[in-house]
Image 1 (cartoon, rainbow, N blue to C red):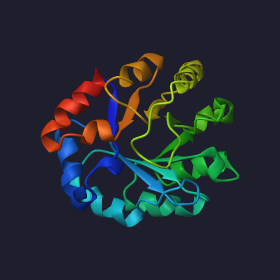
Image 2: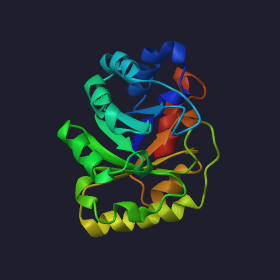
Image 3: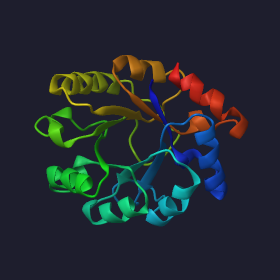
Length: 216
């Protein structure tokens, strides 16, 4: 079954704890946390303290996407705050391999995030150090953007790379994921989907139906 990770970026920030509990009750598998620094991406969102505050509200894993540069100085803080998965961009530090190893040393799963222009070649020789691959199907920085269809080919290529490696690597997609685009991502090889607006639209009573629609 496809993993569904609602992005709290699209939730009601005045009720974050309630929103987190509501999506877990509605069937969410993970909680996706978008961390933006206003430098690596043109927006500012949340820091470790918010992750720490949210952690007791749910039992599902925290999938933390660090859109931060340099990223290495913040790994420990987000892990200590409760991140179960830490995903970083290759462009966010000089030594991706070292960063991934450090994430694992901290006890979290290590993810690599691909911007629309980032080539899958980046991890060709590092598959042993990767637990998750996240394909951005929008340019990172803001929610509610339109799906970039050219990224479906990238998902297919990464699916082939993962299968050839024989590793149990999760292939996640984030950006413009809706009930229409979700089946395309799954058909291309995705095993996890991040969705913000598509989950949180309609309020808590709609969350279960929204999540079910994404699973197909």
